[in-house]
Image (cartoon, rainbow, N blue to C red):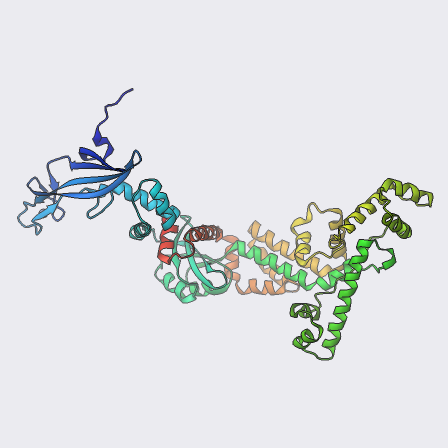
Length: 517
Ligand SMILES: [Zn+2]
């Protein structure tokens, strides 16, 4: 199929291409408007009286790898209407070529989206490759000029803070939860700022926000009739954190439960012996520090006199450094001395060692010996560290909650020991699990009894917090709205900010975030 090519097909609709010339890597197209009339911008009356002409120069989309400059022949008309104040007007080209614009509407659109997607400097570099003649400053100006698309006044919002600089400076983001888009960035997270913005939006009916904190107060002051919804995700997180705190509080008991075995250093393998020596050293250090503390020495003094770090001294004084040493019971215990000697003499074949052990009366299987040999090899690599350690509070919290389905053998032993030895912690775990379930199943009627039960447990302070914010928590259980998507928008915001190398001003950031969605 063949089509007749007309130069006018290259230029915006409604124009006629009169002449095309190439100068270096630029294509110049001389244009004029088809049609003999134009309407007066002041009164709307059509006029056909051309008074003069001039030429506008504007940039357009690139063509075959060349930049394009349009020379638009523009007519000045005389308005014939008797009462019109405007006597002379230049013809207008609508969105195709707005008055005073230096780029066609279609180029401006492209430039705007390029700037939204990439930000100023990267977009300028990319634009150069695309033969779009725009500078970094122009791109930023375009973003500012185009501004944010007008948004419909929201009635359901999510509000949360985000970090300009971590732990240093924060801003606030407001999202329209119904339309799933960010609508406003505020320069800080002060209650007064949020309150002022909320007052300007009295149509808002539902406010999803983080639990407690400033936004709740601001919303209560500005829009007392709006329903506040505590954020479900944060509620779940806070509950999990409360359990982790309970585990931390119980660590002393957990250690006692997990490490009840006494140790005979003679029976240890070389690796275990190394570890045991470390353990003894630590115990000794602990005893020295505790003795100083008993005499009434301050932390500073103890640091000075023992030479240990301040962190370590504090850990010991808080009782967070009572580790326990355990070794595995083994049928090999009576033969360890002989095995060590053989090993030292270079006889390291596990099968051979096992045969000779059997002659000495060892009843165990070959596997026991080969496992010993493997451990021994590891010890030779001085990898003594990982043997028989008490898991961290975080690990224990995970073992007791999320990781319960597929525990390894040693994890099962750990869990069983804790379940037997620290019943209060297990009770706290079940209370937190019930809380999660209640939120997930939207079982609002369980909330009051749950609070009563939790207040008597290791997670009492979390329960008290929930009780203090009970309206919003109840709303979080029954309401379909949640701040979850606001979190997603914050992630997007961080991405945009990173592209701006952290230098973005709030209005630019807002234009890019809101314009891009
Ligand atoms: Zn007129």
